Image (tube, rainbow, N blue to C red; front, side, top):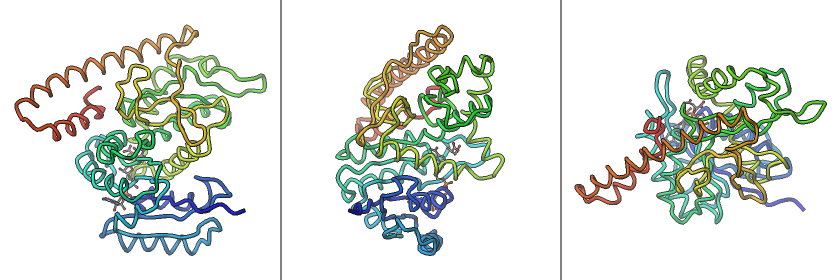
Length: 364
Ligand SMILES: NC(=O)c1ccc[n+]([C@@H]2O[C@H](COP(=O)([O-])OP(=O)(O)OC[C@H]3O[C@@H](n4cnc5c(N)ncnc54)[C@H](O)[C@@H]3O)[C@@H](O)[C@H]2O)c1
Ligand SMILES: O=C(O)C[C@H](O)C(=O)O
């Protein structure tokens, strides 16, 4: 029996990621080759004509799995009944900017779209925030959509994860599909920590640790990390536009693994609501290694400390980073509490504090 169509919302669908993403969804790249979809596309009024052009192209492509297209500038129409929401709408950074520089514009978008999703999306709607600053936007969405379970609100760090896999595969001249279990810790920002200490490569003689195969700790501890951290900026410099096809493909990977499950023995990186694992304060949206099963993600435990001596150095580095971050946040909380008393403005305080705590520049 044919499956019921799944409704997938893409905000900012007239933009460059949207343009790369909707055909992938319509082809079954996100939800599987047997899963019909109805795509909801939202953009703002100035982009309405372009959005209609994308709709025309979707119709013209005659995708067998595509059972309908809603193209609208009305946020309620866009959110009604959606099972999956990919939040791409927003402003991308330009050359020379950091992702936090688009924060003030994008955060206000997520505040208003959160309420529409909360009221009109299908029960158990899964949300993926792509627009930058992705962790912060996801946190804002969570704050303003309190009835959406926090486990359903995630942000994209899969692009960073895939970038790390790509770097290792190029370095070792192996298929990228043979490399697995890198980890992106933290924010989708230049302060993220790409971690290969548990990563392996499938070789003809079994699975081997990446560190042992690369045999170049200087590269792994230096250039590899900065390349992954700075890849978004390198692409902006080269294209004069931010990444789009890789972002769209990674968004499909994120949702596919979340909905359909991760392969046995493999984890992926997702920005998820912290439950306090690895000392990351509960309530932050932070990128962890996760496995997914039956539509639920679970943080992989025990990754910080490994028996491997080489990697323990990085474990310590990571712990130091976390400890410093927590100390900084606690200090910030205390100073904010003082402000709170002075300003006597609780709701504003929570929002501002939450925004700052997710802003990578404050923990850098
Ligand atoms: N997390 C990641 O890995 C990652 C990767 C690449 C890009 N991004 C981010 O994704 C976002 C989109 O990038 P892009 O290159 O597609 O940008 P873009 O400018 O090409 O497209 C953005 C679209 O969003 C629309 N938009 C603006 N405000 C909106 C609103 N209130 N509601 C609905 N739509 C709205 C714009 O009209 C535009 O069509 C940017 O914030 C970018 O930085 C994130
Ligand atoms: O770097 C950017 O601003 C775009 C995106 O977040 C990326 O990582 O490519």
